[in-house]
Image 1 (cartoon, rainbow, N blue to C red):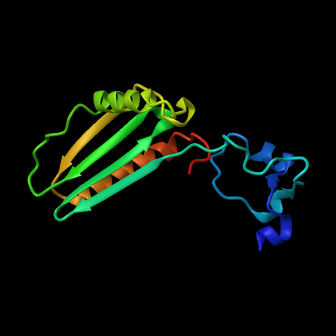
Image 2: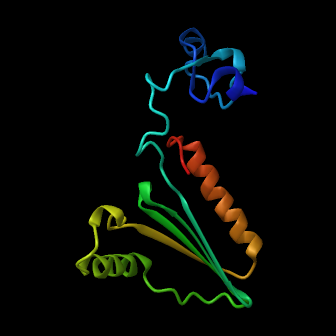
Length: 151
């Protein structure tokens, strides 16, 4: 309904934006929005989104989960096993070494490879529900920091 009424590009009217200034607003009434033309605003400009990557792998009773936030140079790695034994290597050193090896190949472009010096937190768990809860906390913390549009 909203797309039919106001189009695919809209913004909050200036008067209403002044009224809402300083407030934490996540939703808008359709009456507040004004149509904008494609000529005056670019739709989804390149570089307008930040990214968060979620990785999951499962083999038998073992699982590995990862949440990677390149914009903050952070990574969270979770290992789920029946026995909680932390045998993970130093992830920052491993990342930097693999990154360097990748860039040494002649056909690699450095702009598509994440920057160096990411920090990683590793967790070893026996209960997958703890992993889900921690990932939820990571994502909600990111959301509360208001870092902008993120995919």
